[in-house]
Structure formats: structure tokens, C-alpha cells
Length: 385
Image (cartoon, rainbow, N blue to C red; front, top):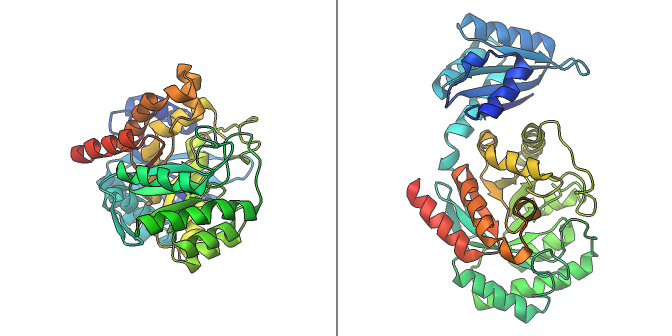
């Protein structure tokens, strides 16, 4: 079973769920919240629905004809949802009841998360900046600029001077259509840069953008503290064991396809629901493995259409009930240029606007090329929290 808190304040979101569950349009009001429970067997679904109805609340029901599994949805304030969850715990199914209470707790206390990564404390009442350093030949924005170790280290120090909290180093391009490179080449690009940065500025918090366990191990040995994995360890299952071995933080991202083919013909029935379900199941497995500091990334631009990217950003709050800080990367991406017809060098202002909206909607780390803009966004919006 999968549980999720939904913000139905947006009319188009409410309308989507009203059609699916046959909800009267008169139920709508701004600030309306709901809990959805998906993939329930028939007996448990009917038992749960009866409990909610007995409490004087409406429980909406839908059945998947193919799987014969049910989805339930009930609405209310957080306190009303909490009371219903307690009733389901005591009068219904214990596992479901605890799952609902955990979901509500995650949502309610989302801004109270804090992580210690290396020697750095992250208080996620605030948002932070992750600066991008691509040591690649063909990254879409800055490919080829920092292939030399000395150039890469110099740029990293500039990123830090401008106020970035984390440097995210990538030795392999993940732009649409890109080809994978071998492990040795990726290690040869990354490790000398890690060493160079830490020699010049000890204690720098370094993230490594890789899908390969050997690259992760060499990087963590050299002093990196975060693995940013676009592939959710599907390509290399050993990667997650390396993360555990070095007690590193892990960024779990959703991607449809691979960088080579992800933009060929991506498609979703409900992009937010499908990404949430993927992150829900994967994060549950990762926590069982003992990974302490987990971040989630819905993967803007990775196997997504333009409309999918905007839907994710508008509904970013609907990922809060997973309970993990949200990392978002929109910087200079093609959905901005396709919307505004902008060249790669003209996208920073638009990127900053989208990054600011993402932070307002729940993003806690923004991964960006323009550090000055990112730092200003976070400082201003942290003051407004």
C-alpha cells in the first residue's frame, strides 16, 4: 500500500481527483487536504471505508479493474486526517494505521528535518545551494570548460566563494542523448578534483553525481560525502551498499529511461502520482538498508515532457509526506527554453524564478549553475519562512 497527502487547493488538481473518485465539485475549497491510499486489497479497503463512514466522514473509493486493487481518498484538515488515522489504527488495520500516521507526521514536520552530513549541519527549516561542477566534454551547459583538474578546482573555489553550501561534481554527462563513459575515465576525472578542492579548502562538502559503485567508492574514499544518483541504483545495485559502507548521504532521483533515450517519447498518466510511488517504494527499501541521510529528487527534465516538469513544480508539496528533504534541479534546462525560446546563455533569470517558486513549494536544496542567484533566493526565502 502507498499513502500520500495531497493538497487539492489548485482547481485543476481537485478536478482531476473529483473525476477519478466522483467527488461533488461543491466539496472544493481553498486549503483542502486529502489522504489517498493506493493499492489496497478489497477486504481491507471496504473495512477502512466503513470506519471512515462511521466517523461521519466521506471516504471516496475507486477500483483498478486490471489489478482489482482499491484506492481510497478522504479529505479534511491535518487534525481531522490524524483523528481518522488513529481510528483506523485502533479499529481497523494496524499496519495501515501506522502508515497513515507516519505520512501525516512527515507532512506536518517536513520543515523540521535536520541532517549532519560530514561536519555540516543542515537545518531544513532553510533552503541550501548546491553548485554544479561538470568535468565533462559534453554537458549541455558547460561541457568542456573544466576538463583540466586545475580549471575544475579553480571553478570549485569560485563556487564556494560565492556561497554554495555543496559542490556537486559530475564526471559523466547526463544530458539528453548522452552516452555513458567507462568507470576508469570517470574516476580519473573526478578524484583529482576532489583531492585538489579538499587540499585548498578542507571540510568542503562534496557531492558526486554518478551511477557507478566503483566511482562512488573512490570518491567517498577521497573525501566526498554525498552520492547523487540519477539512476536510483538500478544500473548498479552495489552502489547503495557503498553509500552505506561510507555512511554517506544519498540523493534518490526519478528518471524514466536513460540519459541516452529518456527524452525520446516520455509519457505519464499521472506524473506526480507515478513519481511519488516510485520514490515511496525505493525510499522504503533504502531506509531498511540503513541509509540515514536520504534526499529525494523528482528528476526535472529526466524523461519528462515540458508539461510534466511544470506539473511537478506546481505540486512539489505533494512529495512532502515521503518525509525527506526535496532537492530540485531546474537550472538552464530545456523546458525553460522551450517555454520562453531562450538560448542556453539566456536562461539564468528564468531559472532563478523557477528555483524561487520551487523553494516556496518545498524544495530544500537547489542544484544550480548560477550560485549568486541561488544564494540570494535562499537567503530571502529563508527570511520569509
